Image (tube, helix red, strand yellow):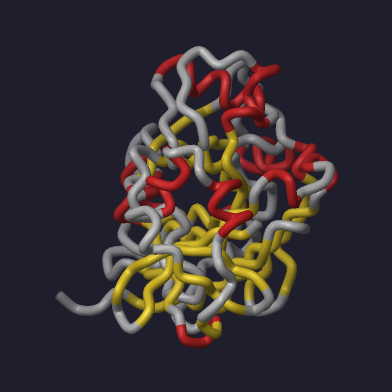
Amino acid sequence: MKFATFSINGTPTWGIIEGGLAFDLGGRFADLKACIAAGALQDIGDHAMRTGGHSLADITWLPVIPNPDKVLCVGLNYEMHRQETGRDVVAHPTIFARFANSQTGHLAPMVRPHVSTELDYEGELAIIIGKPGRYIEPDAAFAHVAGYACYNDGSVRDWQRHSHQFIPGKNFPGTGAFGPWMVTPDDIGDLDALRLQTRVNGAVVQEAQLGQMIFDIPSVIAYCSAFTRLEPGDVIATGTPGGVGAKRKPPLWLAPGDVVEVEIDEIGLLRNTVADESPG
């Protein structure tokens, strides 16, 4: 099943995406995170009335989980990307945080801030946590996953390079695109075999299979749950393949009007157009 957060006539809600329609379930739980926390995804998906659906053209997509307790991001998690950055091989995942208010939805602008022209793309798989846990063992990790989505961990590279800490360059408003929806695990086959592809104006700039991650999903969940309790609705962006704009010669920075797409087999296609930050 596909679950999404969206607005209808300016009112935020959430629901199921099916057959080219959005079915509003906002009357059942306050938001998608609350439904996940209640463990009700399967039940509500099986028994929700598929009537009164809204055309996808009539909704405004919001980040899949607009209000996560936390967004954790894995850096340097594909070998080609590690090599292009010149970083050392490490024994543990590189983890940084993104703030919820830095996120944007499918078809919404990715915003280039006025203080930089070095906005970069990073196509990624996002994990949405379904069941809380601390010190989760790798062999139990998938039981804590509610679903998967596409993520574009947009990076303002000069601000990212201000210090050894990634956080400033990863948290400008409107740079973390998340959507269009969350796909539940029962709708996905062999996760490792799925292809992730990022395109800028139709040209492929990143491509990899999810099984090429250095630290796989169970390892990432186990590691993150050791230093923080994972909560329902938490998001883990699992890292980007090689081919980022900053490491191309010349660099490929995103500019207003550029269209960026992140597509993952069996999960979805996330599309955003780049826009400059509005004055003020």
